Image (tube, rainbow, N blue to C red):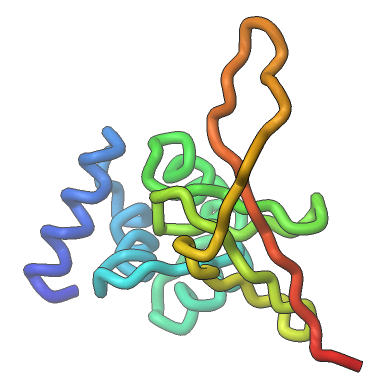
Length: 139
């Protein structure tokens, strides 16, 4: 981990109020260390961590991703109710879900228009709207 990247990763964890444990630092480095936004599953981050030589369990990866979400550092995007992706880009934006490859990518935010939402039930407010546009090749 380069010193500049290490500082950026530590600052990212501090923004969420998280203690910089060795495993959090290692996983955060893989997620945001190069300054690029990512969409990962727990399984893909686990595979990436093994490839980088970091020894963490899949359960630790799940727990760490949950902690990052709870700290407001990432968003969880659920596809099909059973597949979760974790997104490091925190502004409101839509996603494309590519059915053939099970990949999640950002969709153009400026091309999305939501013209109305149902009224939130009494005592609640809309926290955010997730838009996942499913894509497949034409037959």
